[in-house]
Amino acid sequence: MNQEIKRINLNLTIARRSLYNFKLRSALALLGVFLGAFSLIVVSSLAGSLSLKTKMEINKLGENLLIIKGGIIKHFGAKARLFGEANNLTIDDAKSVLHGSKFLKRVSSSSSTTMPVRYGEKVLSSMLVVGVLSNYPHARSFYPQKGRFISKNDNDNLSKVVVLGASAAYKIFGDKNPVGKYILLRRAPCLVIGIMEEKGADISGADQDSQIFIPLNTLLRRFVNKNFIGTIYAQAANEESIPFAKKEIESILRHRHKIRAGEKDDFTVIDLKDVMALKTQATDMITVLGKISAVISFLIGGIGILSIMILIVNERKIEIGIRRAVGAKKRDIIFQFLMESSIVSLGGGVIGVVSGFVTSLIIYKVSGLPFNISLNGLVFSFIASVTVGILAGIYPARKAIAICPVDVIRS
Image (cartoon, rainbow, N blue to C red; front, side):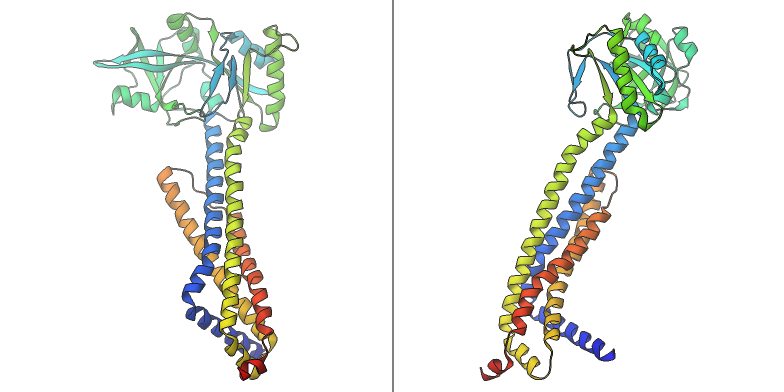
């Protein structure tokens, strides 16, 4: 046992000295493996981070949420487009959806418009004013940070009260506490009763903190004089109920809107899980391309190690012949060259993993993406590095043991 350990240590020492003597070649050999591990870590980590960000954006809109819009929406997301906008959703539609589906927990109607807002000498020419019901915070997972939200009585009495988004409050009042003060929507004085928590932009890119919330009936009756609404938020009982709830909603609305079989819907039911799947398709493509480039880099690294190890064998024929002549076994020569190629490959892999990790941290810091490090990428980089080193060292090792000590001594 001690003899085997001494033999391994001797081979390790010879391998280190050999790599040190061929520093430039060793550095060039590990470059391909370094690039493979680096690209794999960066791409895998960023893909996971983007996927995590997408989930966070989905959660910002609300838990198990289905969004019903009048008209036909395509490409919902960063470049949402509304085709054939229809003013055909009503509060009665929302009530029918709630009472007609056994898979829904709550339904909240909403409508919006832009208005000029004034407080004292400060005038904001165009602010998004959203009419909502009292259950809006629960449907959207969006709650007041200060003061209170709109109540059922506010809606029933057409009260002129508002709740400000965090950014809207700062734009109008600065650092002052706006609760209890009046602002003018157009020319109507409205009492500020609360400020919403910070929410940020949703998955469509809209800033949810720059909105002003007002009772839905107040908006419809006192400001815009309309009977239709723009959006219905339907919250499913659980995640498994979402597809069933979507089918029921479509059936209910088609019946209410008298849409015949074969005719297109005049509304759109948006399943946020489908939206997330669409947004992750691009991320998945980037991940696949990144992994392909990593595999190519590993292959190039393996070929580089193979070619340089062959050169090293040719230049060390005398050393190999003398070692064989004084009693070194074939397995010692094989072990030595496999170890040299593995050390080069694993060294490139470790440097690539560390560099990829640091680069990912810098990207997260600069871009504000959520932190994520791919454990699968780490494991695969390690396995690939070792595998490439062993495979690249097999042929040079076989070439080394084919050297005849007698021929070397004669030469």
